[in-house]
Length: 119
Image (cartoon, rainbow, N blue to C red; front, side, top):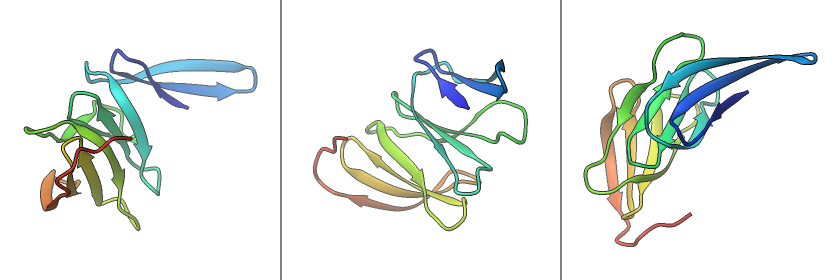
């Protein structure tokens, strides 16, 4: 079970029978608003309240890597484009929809909806 609180720390709860162990996986020092697993569970997107989106690979121990950042508006949501886990789509509060290549964070396409977006 992966969990994050307002402090920006990604935690992993390993639960077996009536026992559990807590492991700190990453500390991005920003409140995390959403955790989204890729379809194959190889990657985890961490969407922050302040804008950036990070990637964490559970099979590889280490820090979360900043993938996406925005200058004009905060990311409201992001998710993987399926099939696979090479691309993701995001939407900002200002209504900009973007498609990203996750290996290097390249923005491949943008569409401005010209409206403010709310969840």
